Length: 518
Image (tube, rainbow, N blue to C red; front, side, top):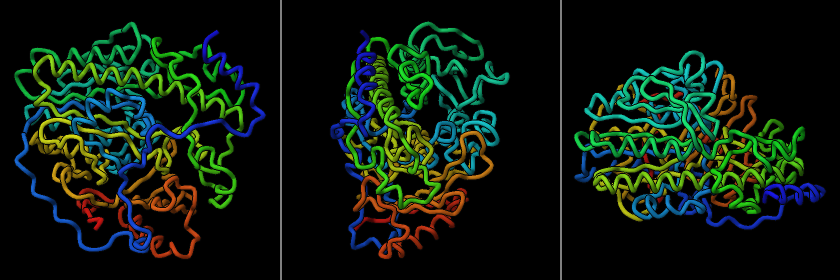
C-alpha cells in the first residue's frame, strides 16, 4: 500500500481527536528577526533616520540569477540542504524578508516593477486589477536591464493568467530568451506546455525537472560569455496543482472539508516525508481562547474541523517532498555556473514570492497579514555580498528590483517604491516601515486590509474598520491581539498614523528611511 494511503487510513480512524501530534520545527523562522525591548514598545519609531552607508567599491554589471519558488515557507528551509549550503552559507540570509502583498500575481509583479501592488496595478490574481491582463509589461526590470546591455532570460511560471484568453504565444517586451509555462498547464506538474520565444512546445516529464533543464540550457549557453545577463527562473512547486494521485487529500477525503488541493512531488520524492508532523506552534489551529478576542471578520476565526487538520498534515508532507525538486534544481543551476566559469561573477538570489500558512492562524494558504504569510525565504550570494551573514534589516519584493538595477547600473523605467539594499548588507541592523495590503482573490477594486509592519509590530485595518495589532517582542506567534490593551495604545496610534500616511504611497512618498535599533 502507498505510504500516504496507509497514513490516511490511520488518520481517518483518528478523526475523533481534536488535533494532530506534532513536534517542534527543525529551525525557528524567527531567528534574527529585528526586535525591540518591551520598554521601548510605546515608541514604534524613534530618533533620526540612519544616513545611508557609503556604497563600497562593489563589482558592477555582474550577472544576476534570481531563482524563486512558489508559496515556499520559511518553515520549509530546514528541509532544503542545497539551498542552505550553496547560497545561505556562502552569502547573506535575510531573516526579515517581506512580501507586502503576499499572494501570487501581485508578489511576482512587484519583482518586475519595483513597486507596491497599489502602484503597478496588479493587486490580485484575477478579475479587475488582477493577473496577467492587469500588468503593464512595457516598463519592467527586464526592459530596463535590456536597455542597459543585459541579456534577459526567463523560465517557468509568469504572472497568473499568462497563456489564457489568447495570450499563449505572447512574449512580453524586454526578454532575450523566453521559456514560460502557459496557463492552465502551469499547474500540471507533468508535461506542461511552454512558450519558447513565441512557439508552443509540449514537454514531457516533471515540471521542476523540465524547468531546471531549461534554466541550465539558458545560463550555460556560449552566448552568456559575451555580455552580462539576468535570468529569472520561477519554479511552480510547492504551489498546489495536479494530477490528483493516490493518497492525496482530494482522493482520500473526496466530498468533505478534507478534500484540499495539494502540490505534487516528483515521483522519486513521493512518500519521502510521509508522517512528518506539522511544526508545533501556539498559532497552529489557533484555539478559541485566542480567536474569541479577535474581530468577528478576522481571518484567524475560521473553523478547521478535524478532517481538514488531518488533510493539512498530509499536505504539509507533500510540500516538503515537492521542495526537494526545487532544492536539487538550485544545486543544478549552481553547478552550471561553476562549470561554465560564471559563478564568481554572478549574483544569485533565492526567494519565494510569498509565504504560506499550513494551519497557522487557522489558515491554509496566503494573502493575509500574519507573519508566516508575509515573511518570505530570501538569500543572496555572489560578488559584493558578505559570506555567511544574517541580515535582519527588512527587505521587500520591490527592494529586490531596485537592488538588481543597482547591480547592473541600469536606470528604472518606472518610479521605484523599493530601495537598493546593497549599502545595508554590512550595516548594523535597522528597522523600517513596510506597508502591507491585500485584496480579494478575484476582485481588486477594494482592499481587504491595509497596514504596516515595523520591527516586531504588525498593525492592520480590515475592510469593515476592525483592527488587529501584534507585538512579536513578547508574542512571536501573533496570538494576542493588542488593539484593546491599554499599554499598547501609544503604539496603536502611531501605527494607525503610519498606515494612513503610507497606504497609497508612491515613489518618494513611500517609506525609504531606516532607523537604528540602538
